[in-house]
Amino acid sequence: MKNVFFKYLLEFLVIFLGILLSFYIDGRVKLNAETENKNQLLVQLSEVISEDLKQLQIIDSTLFSVEESLSYLIDDLLSKSKASSKELALNHLNVGGRMSLSFFPNSGIYKQILSDGAMKLIDAKELRSTISLIYEHNSKRSQAVNRSLDDFNELFNGYFYPYVQTRTANEKSKTIYADTKLVYHSISPDYYKATSAFGYYYGASNLVSNYRSLLDVFKEEYKNVLQLIQIELNQP
Image (tube, rainbow, N blue to C red; front, side):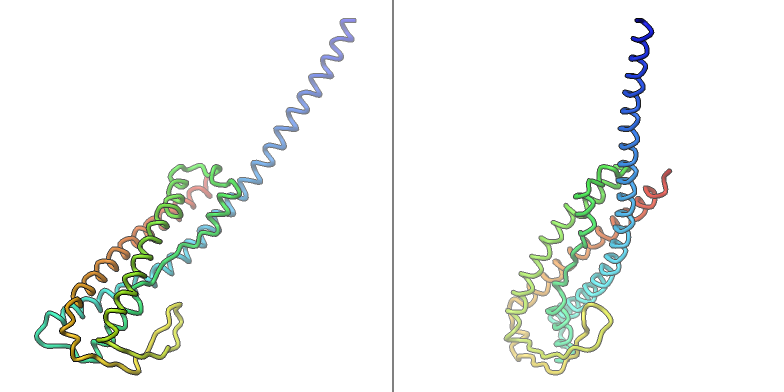
């Protein structure tokens, strides 16, 4: 009787351990698959960030030229010797047409990381927090600044329309922002009497400068994320 009891007990333990082992193996297989998916998503995120950095550089260099034009226009207002009408028109066109260029992070892979539950599998807390900072907090800040620039740009162009009028033609460009050629311009004799001109130029300069500072934050955090991703992918 005792032998029969131990026989059934042994069979039960074998079956029970077999079930536990099966659950363990299934769990490991699932975890390995999820980890592999997480790593693939991080590789894709690195590629997206690298492209975003290129776009950031284009936008930042364009906004730098806008700042240069604004400095030129402000100096011209304050100077006794005035700029030629063409130079004034070219710099004004550069400001009015480009000051509200916006950067929107490509968040597709980030959203997939969230939907796949891959974020919780990232070992480095700093990497998780920095990714969230870029695509949540900083993106919202960027959207707010973009709206402010768009609204101000509309007011800017509306105010100066009676004083500065231009017509342009697009030239071939390899960048996403086509270059323009000035084909006609007219500067009103009352341009230098426009009482709010300095305020609009100075306000535009501040907005563009602040936005460029935010873009610098994006660039530094993007570079940091790229380094952290490589560390994550190279760990055993």
